[in-house]
Length: 64
Image (tube, rainbow, N blue to C red; front, side, top):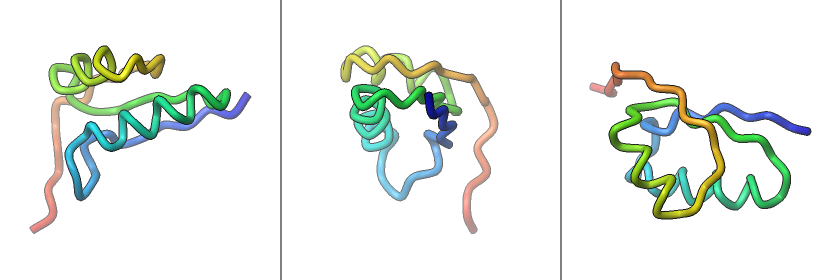
């Protein structure tokens, strides 16, 4: 099985876009790990029915 870790807070769009992609990848047999703020990701994972694991990372480095 392929395992992929995604920086769920590092998109040009909101994290929901990445959770939607992680959901689709999971349905294709990819084991997805979402790395980011679990307070933001947990409700999105529930909303999309995503099976990805969440690894909490409190810090976000923004581009200047």
